[in-house]
Image: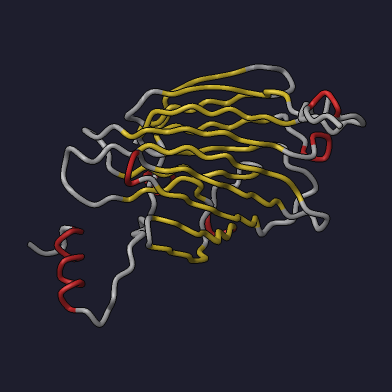
Length: 180
Length: 57
């Protein structure tokens, strides 16, 4: 018996994804990225990879939200999040659609905040877009985990665009997806 | 607030970048999450939290 990717047959290998789009942006201004021309019906699954870092001299809040089909009304989304920060665990469900969120009160210079998230975007049989995000936030001994499920309350026939809107911080975004 | 707006069309490959003004409400959380448990029955903790938030000195 042997193990390894070479033994996998029948299309099980992790090769279905293509890089659809990649961009980066400088801080401290925010960014509003919209990727159009998509079709979740055709592509089945999109994976968004986001990394961000704040500018401690300009902002102490870092937030990034994902929007479906250009709808930036956060009231139309629900997020159920779970935050694991050391021994502190927080959970809640609110109308919002963030995948990265750090609101640290204080005075300048603010703490450096870094975050990275992998975000899965797809549609269910009822026509509702669903987002699952896992974020690895902060640095070193203060790092924490943010797990979020987001539900878009408007039934759609397709996901044709994905937007990522983030407040002041530099970062990089890559969208993967698509069946070959 | 000025932000960098990037639009990319996955069908045509066309990308545009421009600086645009957006309402702060779009990119700034109206109620930033305070991911910290506060015991509302603990006055000392409430005062400390209020100081941390800059509500009181």
